Amino acid sequence: MFQRCPQSMAVKWTGGHSSSVLCLTVSAEGLVVSSAERGELALWDGGGSLVGQLRLPGDDDVTSVVFSARRPSTLYTSHGETISVLDVRALQEPLERFHVNEEEINCLSVNDTDSLLAAADDSGAIKVVDLESKKVTRSLRHSNICSSVAFRPQRPQSLVSCGLDMQVMLWNLQKARPLWTTNLQECGTEEDSPQSAGQFFNPPLAHSLSVASCGNVFGCGAQDGKVRIFRVTGVKFERELEFQGHSLGVSQVLFMPQAYWLLSGGNDGKVLLWDIGSELGKQQKSPAKSLQRRKAQAPASSKKNGKLNKVSSSEQAGVVPKLTIEHGEKVNWLSCAEIKGCRRVLVADQSSSVSVYPLPEL
Image 1 (cartoon, rainbow, N blue to C red):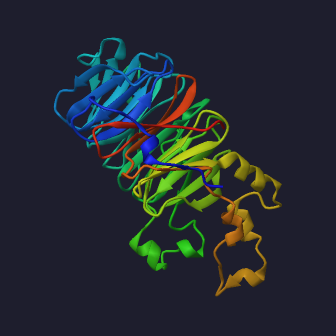
Image 2 (image 1 turned 90 degrees about the vertical axis):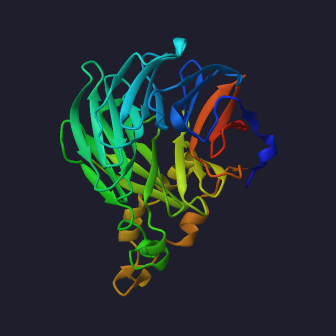
């Protein structure tokens, strides 16, 4: 059942920026940082009051912001090819600044022991930095722009990444090569095959990743409007779910802290909330527990010209959003915060404000 949340229900946080807000992050203490074009950073308290502003040197767009896992006042920011470390208790000149990437950074991730930081950039490189020495300990690579990277919770040496090469990769930092790689164009149903006209004009360029708090389930949003859910099993991962989330590209996916609730935001101006846990539960009850296995075990009658037909629509029909927010603007970033005892979705878009929507009880 769709619940629609009209744009009029949004609270706007204004006055923090003069241009498009590009990304958001929330500290363990409930502080919100938004960043924008031309080096702009803004700090908000839980009630949406502006409590600090800073323009980073160089006027490069601030493309990613992430709080330290162990030090809630320490903020890592990427602007251009530079990573700056800030203290939000006194938002002023960076405490430290280091330059390890050769092209613009798209995404930062810090592991939960606060020992390593990963920075993914336009060259396809992922630079893994030891936060004590500020030196690169590992260089990983995609063949095209690396759009997103995320450490897995409870596994400080393991991360996942995705990029515009349509690759999703699982890494262990003890190895230079990925443990497992999936090409979104090749791993789909027949409908997703390279021969498909829709795929040719709208390939599944991977834009965003988010890992659930368990560390073994992660989601990927792609340009074809689909959300794909994977489960890590040892040194590989399997695709558990795939569903059409948006009519245009999925720019953001975000697992919320509790259970398996996933937010997705798209270029179609929608923000959707999905109950992935119930869908994974259905998969576990099925004799074939993954999408690949279901396809592999499909009866011969479902094959055509040696290829499997697309997965039965009934298998995907049950995956519908629990909440639809008609935001109306292309989504740049999503975050989630508890404000005055209620959970809220924070949305950054092409405007200079942050939109805040209430979430129903989950």
